[in-house]
Image 1 (tube, rainbow, N blue to C red):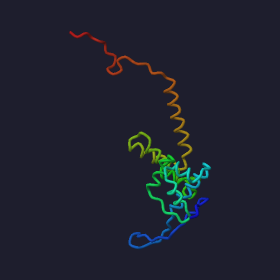
Image 2: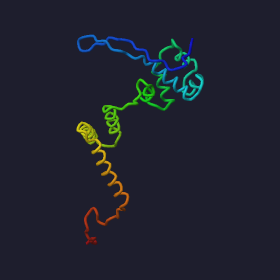
Image 3: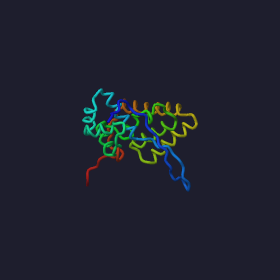
Image 4: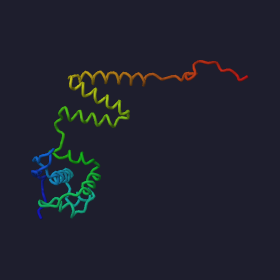
Length: 185
């Protein structure tokens, strides 16, 4: 039983999948190797033993040692759930810690995707979010993203400064106009 001392290079396996009416070959990455790599990096970053690492990740020491073995058992989804909870990351963030899935280079599709995700978290109605996404995509296609960002920033900043510098006095009769109060007859 030889425990891995450094992150393994993820193995790949060719698989056949049905696409339409014919079988095609695809390459599958061994996610156990990816998970092993992230955990080993975490252990090394924190300069801790496998035993301490297991405790920090909410696992039994034997479970982690067996998993980190060169011929170790595969990870269960429950184990990954526990590790993500302990590290306070989502599964996506967990996998992004690995070089294979990290987003060190950003291409147009990646940052547009990030903006779409961010737009979904904004408290807007669906139609407004969809329009915002379309405006951004169109600006990128027309090579106007810098112009759009500069104008949007200027506008929002101006409105923000105006709202914060102007104290709105409370007006009388704002709802019903300036009607005189009359005593009931």
